[in-house]
Amino acid sequence: MTTNDHPNLTVVDHPLIRHKLGLLRSVDTPKKLFRELTDEITTLMAYEATRDLEEETVEVQTPMETMRGSRISGKKMVIVPVLRAGLGMVEGVLRLMPSARVGHVGMARDEKSLEPDEYYFKVPADTASRRFMVVDPMLATGGSAAAVIAGLKRRGALRISVMCIVAAPEGVRALYAAHPDVQLFAAVLDRQLNEVGYIVPGLGDAGDRLFGTK
Ligand code: PRP
Ligand code: URA
Image 1 (cartoon, rainbow, N blue to C red):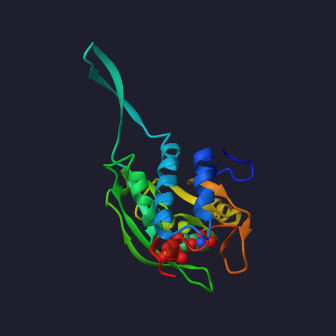
Image 2 (image 1 turned 90 degrees about the vertical axis):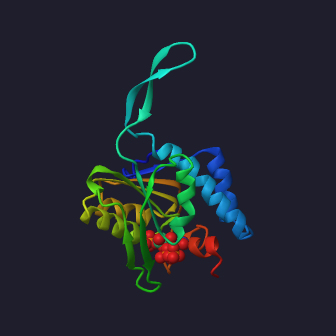
């Protein structure tokens, strides 16, 4: 579903995603289940977020006859998890595209200024010829995602999308202002950010809930 308010946003809404999202948000959900739900929601979303992959025709010999089939063409996609929380989404995409490459970008959001601080950046070198899918469960101010996209563009990337689970309207708008060419996929668009930059109703701190650091 796309919205008039946010031309860059596709909300991947599906009964299974909504059901799993309710469990993911719950404060009573333990870490093991939180990780499993993050992974499952990612796979369901990735199906939709890869709808525009390019294909080519190939000849297939069935036991009955020869036919024209299809296969994904071009270089392998690069999944780019934003450390840490993005790591929880990597397997969910790899399940559908097991040959995808995986880059890593470390961004830590300063708790006061909410500005992202880059501490690691490693992606395949042939950036111009590959598609990149940035994954991070939370898009709050949009600062982290915008900084990752800017880093990818500086390295020559031309085709970038972002997949998050929970997005805040403030972040969606900021991302559109900074990178109108980048399509964003979210499982849900939440109400707003609170006074300390957390998404409400949200799900809390995704990194802490995935890795048990609080
Ligand atoms: C969280 C989240 C995003 C970022 C979103 O990460 O996983 O990367 O904040 O906020 P923004 O849209 O306002 O930039 P955090 O920096 O807390 O690091 P973590 O993944 O290590 O917990
Ligand atoms: N990062 C999170 O993990 N959660 C939020 O609500 C905002 C940023």
